[in-house]
Amino acid sequence: MQALRVIDLRACTLSFLTDDVVHAHFKDGMTGAVTDLKEMFAAIARERGGHKALLMVSFGDQAALTNDARNYASGEDSNRHFAADAIIVRDFGHQMSANAFVRVNKPQRPIRLFPDEESAMAWLLEQRGLIT
Image (cartoon, rainbow, N blue to C red; front, side, top):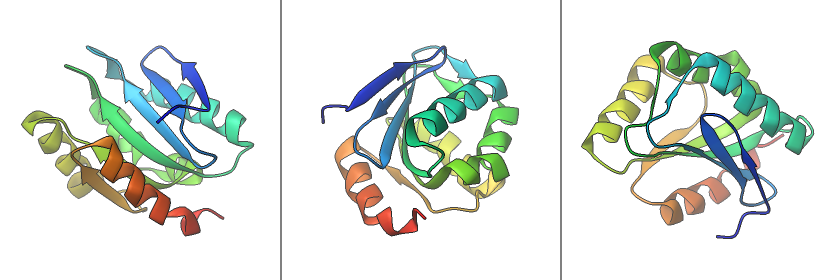
């Protein structure tokens, strides 16, 4: 899918796929910290005029989030910016991390894991009613 707009940040690339769906891809070898997530959230908020988004997340080779970043990603600040998350898991390691995020950090919004962008996008588009 062709992005409407792309923003390149230190840890990730943000692709605005539709008016409501943003794809955050963490770059190869990057370990995202809380400061990276704050930068990401601020960029999305600017682009969306403060309106919530539907977030698709993917990770490049050896990309991850710190424990503090995972805690932050499941907290109130994150919930102010996102109505639902679709996490794309490429391999067993990413699946383990994503499952831990969902079960341990327990974000207070719908989150599902997907094997590819197409199925993640289809589910996110079904969640549009959550954006208020």
